[in-house]
Image 1 (cartoon, helix red, strand yellow):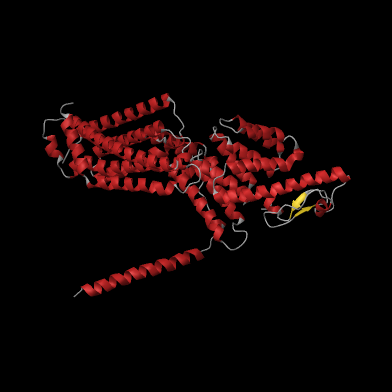
Image 2 (cartoon, rainbow over the protein chains, first blue to last red):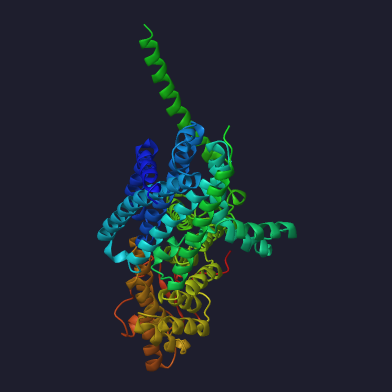
Length: 270
Length: 288
């Protein structure tokens, strides 16, 4: 553990120095300002729209953070061959992967906390401007949605680590991570669609159904973490839902990082 | 020495940009627009492609519907919105509520406009039913459904059921239950319509809709006033008046109430009070 901490801190600092981080934060801030303009256009449920936009802005920024800052942090050592320098130090490859991931997780958590605070501020200001249009509104659910969003980003970042452990360039890692994200978000709907294709009048072969069912267990089901709709309408979740989703997320992250470390240990560098 | 030509080139390019953008925007408007281009992606596909931004996609689809209907106010031809455009509007609101079935605005907007404007009572009710299923804390949606059943479909039984459903929901107005009981008496149609309309008006904030509802309410009040006068006339003289002026000559009323749509009230052969702007009061659900 002691060996991991300095590596995590170095990774975090490296991430903070990345210019892309500022671009992403700026984008999020612009979206929060746009929130005032857009939510004012609606008739009744202004609160719902304001929460939608704020939470979506946080999710989008988190996603960009993982894809453009996170992957770089992992892959840069490989791309620029600085990995040789790291590996010559007295830390194992396993520690290297775990330490890197901890640094990345720290970066994600700190950035998401900052963005979440901005998001809540923008919601609060709109709430002050239109107090009568926030009838079903719940801060705890918004907080939970933001936490789940952070968990999604940690999960995606763990997957990116797994991909980076066996690919040769960061670009391939990026592509694989984007694909995993899209599959993860749409998997339950695709599964529902291919299992009942008559609802849109299409035909699906039994092979496709089997493939989707396999993918359902292989890829992370990210849509489980997406509770923005419930947060926007103040619909509460059961405690067991929260417990099982968090367990599922943490298990998937640990599994991905362990696999990444195992693959990385066996990897030979030219 | 290259400075001046570069500046001139830049200015020319900016001007070409502005002119061509203006021209192409005009050309785009000339492109054929019709039912073929009004396709709304099936909702299962929309749900998949919206990824985790379904709430946002739902908001923007609703905004699209809102902006579209607003833009038709500027049209010169009558009716401003074509039949297929009403259908498209229904589909887009349906898609918006499939992405976020708890979103109140599309139900509210769809119900207010699809019924009075488009005559799509069935579609408006389908939207409302979806909303009633998902927003199980909301008492106004079953109330709207009850109104549609009573006013447009003239189905008092369904209306009464919907109002009962509304009255059972949290925070329901006591009016729902009493209206549900009143609907059993078919003869008090105008009075019931006024009670409904008054309640809807109280819960409407949009100024355009309020104005529309107030006018309709005034017209209905005029009808009720004259209906009561006709009953009085029949009690006194044992027969129905031939024309409304008889009510004045026999000193039952002093003068006819103003007709807020600019038309005239009249009495038909079945002694029913009608107005020459009847289409504003009683829409024809099956006109399309």
